[in-house]
Image (cartoon, rainbow, N blue to C red; front, side, top):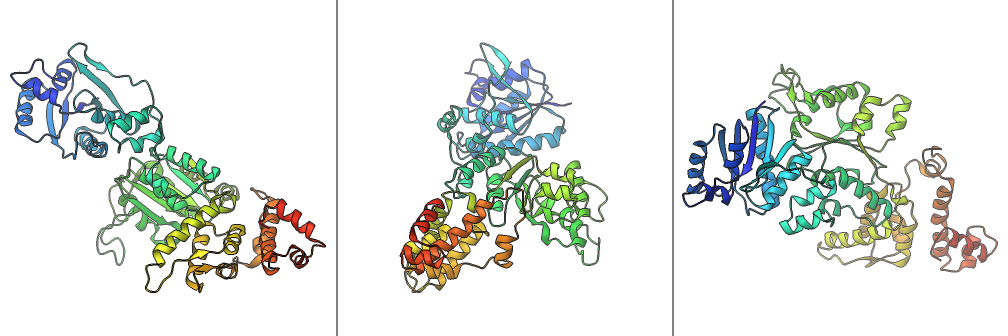
Length: 500
């Protein structure tokens, strides 16, 4: 097993090798006191002093010395340092063997460089951390804490001062997760869990109804992961033809079948080093579930007509609008694949369960549409009337955020004036697929079904309509819905929190 030292070349090393310097510098001291077969040194100076240092160091050690020149915008720029390190380590393992014993030297270079070595050792590559000094020599560093997972993506972008604040417990909002608009407590908990999951490579299963933003969440997890520099490859599992599954997922060689005029990489190879997003994974046929499971277990694929397996390093994020646990019970989804995908499982709540989010989303989407559609010739800035806004607030949104955005877009296009009234908002709503009977009366029992919630949807649909048609008169509105008097209507308005 090869023993490899990785370190940044620091000023102290260069001075230590000069005639004026005293001592030998931290790198030379580590090579003298510890036994290493190889040393991979990262250099961001790119001057003659480094070349002279390399010659000097090679004359003092039996270890094989390799200097990799790196261009940094700044020796304290965490993102540049991180990407340089993440390029150097896989190169080292390819050159000296996957089982090489790695040691990261914290002393040479800037504090930002030391911070990145710690982060990488804690999250991606098993390595010993060492430091050296003239007083104490070379010693193993026992870091007395585990970096909080949700801080790691932010850490690689921050200055040394910001990194110190993170270590003290301060929290920064990651911009990718900032794209997920929310205010509700249930969404805050979801985003918190997803942020905790982001830095790791374990599989994630995202479940939720259509239109809830599962892909947006998957992209945020990838964007804030240590694989963010790799590709995010999206696959709609329900759209892959059965006869092309292996070619699409695992690739093929030229001549593998009629029309295969050249080699083609499959989705796994395309996502090498990044994230493979399996959307609608519940739609996979049984025979394809077996092949997917084998690829995930073995971490390798073989292209059609290929003679050798190809090792793949991808993180899998899967999403589905089906209840996969129920599908496992019914026998339509493999139990072993379910557990392979559901290492870190999250459930995206439907919009009707996100208290306080509908109004917030309406306001933000109105701003977005004014910016997008308002740039057209002759366009005017639009807003929702109080009646139109209340109508949208009371809608059940079976299509969730996707339905809400589509409804607002239609209302913007079809409305005549600068204010979208309740009638125009209602006309922009789509009829529930399958009709009202399927939407209200055909729902499956159990699995979170609540009769009071269904009654609430009905009440919140009809009472605002009655008040609008009665021009605000509670007596007339009560008559329209069959109540004997306005007091009954008032009681129902209060019970179901309908603006009256």
